[in-house]
Image (tube, rainbow, N blue to C red):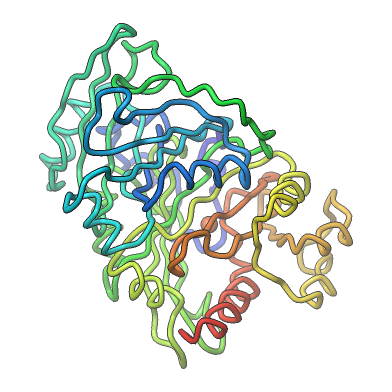
Length: 387
Ligand code: FE2
């Protein structure tokens, strides 16, 4: 798990002392971590094959006609502490179909692991959260799980998962999924952060939601002039829960000469949603090499990025030539440095992508790389004719 968030003290761009923030942060919603991320996709069987092959996820659990589920099929994949659920509808005209029609393949559920899903529901709805699912107990021979859910931005929901009385593979209703095809993992350990894109002027509304409804604190803020390129701009604030295990940066578009990448996302996703999932590795060079070999496409960074790299970030353990070969970006803050790289969008619409991140002390989000990153995204937008 990431280091305690209090280490972020004195980080540049932090608006308040974190100590103050977390003494103010109410722990009415203690979170043990991210439980799973569920995507609604057009063809879960084929998507599961892609996530296994390209990203090294392992088969974990399955639900569908064979397990008595009539309206949907779900494949559950795991790597390190990351669990991904891929769900497709089996019938016409339902809520999942509508979600896919509107948004394309995308994240529906960011599930959070809690001690008490009933309390999580009561505490958040009491503070204004829109209910998605009342606390529900599901049982099988392995025990029981209590789940509940609330809406966040767009049609995205947070499920609360209480599994302390459960010994099964995933959730009741799922069976273990044994497969003869098990590509090696690529070293992905846990979800470092998940970013939401929201509409014009909605960033503060949703930061307020995470603050007031979920007891999160704002740890970092980026104004548009921090992260504007010549063309496109956005604003971002990072919200964290009290133990720092769950971090949600929230982006909104800002005015630029051309269309913001956030605006492009909103146009194609038809509203707010999850923009990227950042996954942590202990060895980004090995992880990225393996992913690249398996067909994952990453954003391209010009060689000039590396010309003055060591002047910008100081001494690093890695060989700059190796980083350059893979296009890995580096940024430093007061506590150390981080290495990161972003895939191109991994679904048909230009919406969701994956970030691979390795932290070597730094607890920030790579603000020094934003310009290079956004210019790389703009090159992709230009190819799509959406800049
Ligand atoms: Fe990120």
